[in-house]
Length: 441
Ligand code: URA
Image 1: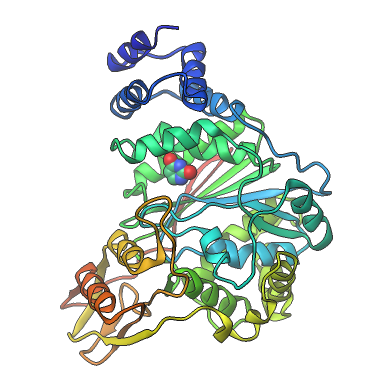
Image 2: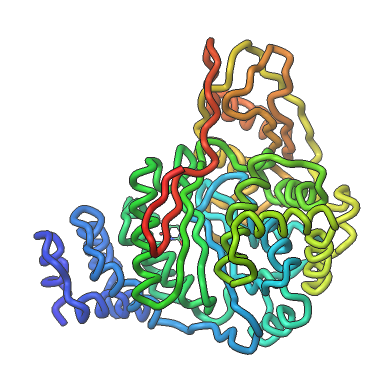
């Protein structure tokens, strides 16, 4: 197939055939098409878009370039959950144990941090001894034994996405609806779940920063799910501020344990309940959303959710004592309390800048091979809408050096905007999208 003519067609805004799209996905997975031609087509897609049929064909072609996990040995309906990426966004560590404690098996393959966003695998690896690399056999056995496993990908799922994502990252083509939808859905379909809950973030820390674009992305992924015969529910949730108050790998594990232990409530818990309830509904555990939320809340009150997390940590070789003793998680040599230093109402946060501040402290990678520092990051208790005074605690920094703490303090202050008059709190969620349509909050 003449790849130049495929690029040219899309450059002119024409529709690509299934065969042309398959050549693109296979060429990316095998290396048969050089990066410069792949990059040219990515940019043409970024600028001219794809229709629903092309987006679905791209997703399915990318899916077919690799393995598909077979979870059929696990009894029950397996429901996966995926977030498009955020800051302090550690819902998996909260909801996976809660959903499993409610009797629905959670066999989850998660990812690592990407750019300013955190990744579940990096967070889990901050627990001493815990491994996220299990064979498919051990993964399935663990879910059969305790109902829960969260690991890195087994086998080679959607290898086309691996090449294309790396190219998109360096060719300014990440922010393309068909490319994001096909990237996420090819991996989700490959991970073998029967149904999928998507948390589509929107706002200053999200890949899609406007509500309408985020709803469009949610709709595209629900449509792909329908054509692939996999029920998908997408919820568009706010990322105008970090979801939890803790940002950084071990810090987010602490935040999740505090929530599971019933010691803290807040947006992280609320969004985890919304997503977890959808998982229980899709799994057929209950037909009623309120009942689903009550079941999840009961799993917190009874300690069953925390116990499930303990079992998972033990099964994956980690030090389960962290569940009762948070001081066993990695710390840092420098801890600094920072106060607001001004009077006003928190009006806005540049959440991407906050994620980048944590990344610069060592919580994320600048290059793929960079090591992480599991202990670094910050606690930011202030939320949009809060009134602050000069001596109100603004954040606590956990850094490797005083110089890195200085840099982070500066970046965090620059990311926050204070107003002279009261400001409303942003909604937790904006829309739910499923096979029946879009429901706005
Ligand atoms: N997450 C993905 O896996 N792919 C994208 O394109 C964006 C977010």
